[in-house]
Image: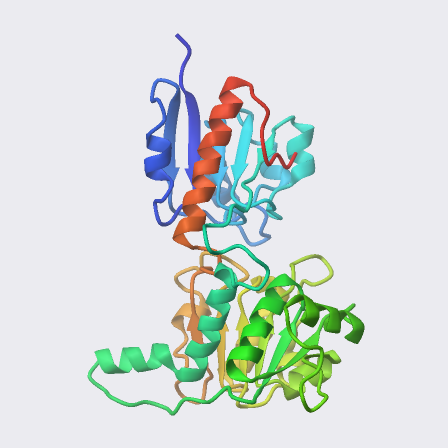
Length: 362
């Protein structure tokens, strides 16, 4: 009798995968769950012993299920996993995987498609990340985290909130998510939208407005989505929101020079990827109170170490900016995660039977 296939499920912090994988026939599959994410193998500051711990954890498994980008699989790690025969990832893209290295080993990588829950299809409707971004903008403007903490600790009112009505919303990146957030801030709050990315033209910005079901210009002849220069965006925006895909070109695209141009009353929001911004530069601006607040869902290193300055600094005190932090929750929505893990289990069973793999990345 053949031994059951050893399966590792990584980084499912909410435990949504467990009932799905535990329902598999235990005579065929031996499944282990690891909720703690070990430090990435490919970071220059990851010690050799920590790399060894990650290899020791993963080496026994034939199949690994990973949550996108939480545990990177660079070529150096792939080469140290001789038993790996199938890698399952959530989503249909995972930039933390070295697909060339996996393909060279003949290891299929299978993602999960976007099967939107009922009532969530259509380009005009917000998705999970859009909702989270808008929530963070509102929370930062209305001081929700600080007020909640104050009331629970026995205080009452704290600092006054700021209104978004008629203010300027700056979008760094006018792709699908940037457009979705900008549309809500424009229609819902009457904010004037300015946008910048390296290749954005006014013609393209107008096209994006039309695609979002908005007029190209308002009644006063102002562009609904105004394409501006990078300096103008950071100087004029009351809220700056990041919506770029992380790549070699976009890594570190926002620096101290940009952040120091922002209004002292402005709010900086990042729900895209932490490395888009030079982290030390952002910390420096916030520690000296250069802007009103930052709302961050993403970071250079995730999960944040316990001694991270993001965790330990007394934000909002002694002249520092206010800082709102969430643990990369933009895509963490119950229906989405349930659908992703359903598809992973389906892919695992198809692989075990030798059937064609759907959503195969390599």
